Image (cartoon, rainbow, N blue to C red; front, side):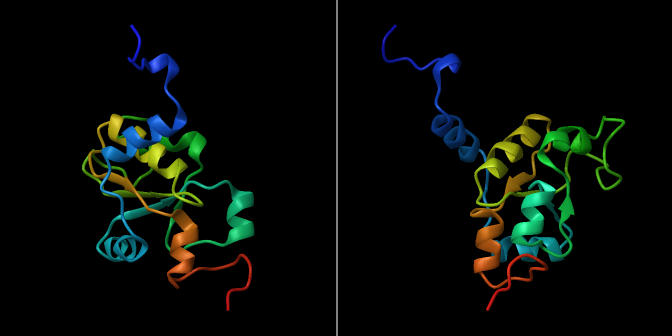
Length: 138
């Protein structure tokens, strides 16, 4: 069966493209507006990366390795903010790659309003949006 790509031999670029095809990805200013309207911006970067790059005030910090347990409404480990599958969640990583995969995983759990921040923290900071810590920005 030549020409058919099975799940066993897909590339990460294919997996990423499939994940993104399901997401209504947000630009930084759109994400900021949604935060003001009650959406959760979730920073999945490791602590060391947040310390080096800076943080977005008001973002919820949930490292990637526990994300699904914290956002599954049926999980005993869920966050208090997660009451149902309709919650609006915007995932942010450093550059917008890992966040796409993570948001697709949340959609797989039934969180249909999960998406990610295109360009990640780097795009947020480049847009001049509020950032604390990290390198000095002029």
